[in-house]
Length: 483
Image 1 (cartoon, rainbow, N blue to C red):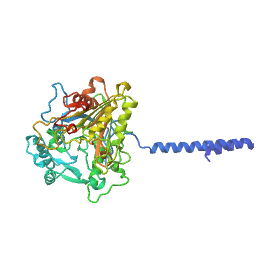
Image 2: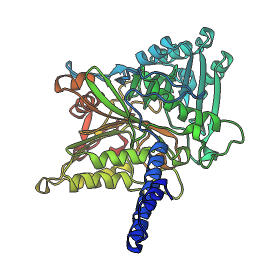
Image 3: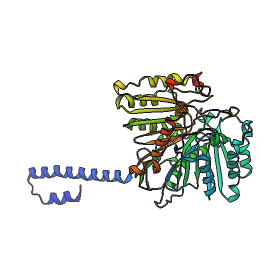
């Protein structure tokens, strides 16, 4: 019994009623004391939410000071010969960003890409438009001579090419691992990102392909001076690197060193130039995500469920099915979330889906199904357009002249990812995404906030001559869905 109870008991006389009452109070006080101790222990043991500017611990247990600036800028690649109106605005050119990241690297560069084709010879093509790709390859080759460590992960299986890029890089001292996702998950490594000095990050739709710089419309984000985010993305990179060892097997569960303190429940908080931001990274497939990592599908469906006014989506492919497994399966999770947003909350939906010479015509019925529920009388607004990049005189370059974007922006958040929107990309295929929710004064929203930049890019494309309503498609020589 607590000592307070003993003192209380000594002060009582032998009256039985009073003694019994004392016992009852002692039991109550004792229970409250135990409960207080348990609550205190629970609070002390609860993982703390990331603080503003907080950085993740280093592997040796140390930590940086809270000095992240985390400046974010939209990155784009516009195909050659695609011309917009004179007043159109764009993100920073992809080529410039990659060159900048290479030039500022002091210690280490880590790159994840589905495949590598940085020269025309890699795909049997002679074209002056591969010059930017050649320049990037040359710049990467020179990094080891600057005492910058370079590690690269890529996929098995991958795109069949004659590429010698990785062999050239290995000869220069670059470390390369090929991750056999075919064996591990029955998918591929489809992620596309850079980490430089564990403080700068690029995430987007672009593979290490010269066509991404001049022939394919790409979109991503570069985040400078954000060691918290970079170290978190490195955990994903390290999971690929470790699984790139021969005879590797997926851990169940993943060891704690792969855990993250940054997720949907506890986003990273930063403020730069009057823009306050909440950030977190997402991952797929589930078998590659520790429990603390927010999965891609969860992020996308939650963003759709939280939107109140509008949802703008730009993706290369949209299928509410699996695409590559046999037999194919119906996979309605994103499709249902879109329909619920439109029907129950009257959210305005705009979807900009890519169409090129290699697009799958089987996508069209699913898009028409979504568009068919547009009904002004019930205040349901779903508009779908196809973005068609003119082929022009570039027809000799395969798998090109397409809008490769993979992003969404709503009135609440922005999502920039590396996956197309069909089942396999969230079940078996490796991908990453960045979710950003921002607040800023209206005058600087479009220029300083990533959400504002992304909305402006969507509007530019939506109202451009390259966006065609599916109801008005007709026959278009550069769009396989019209054949």
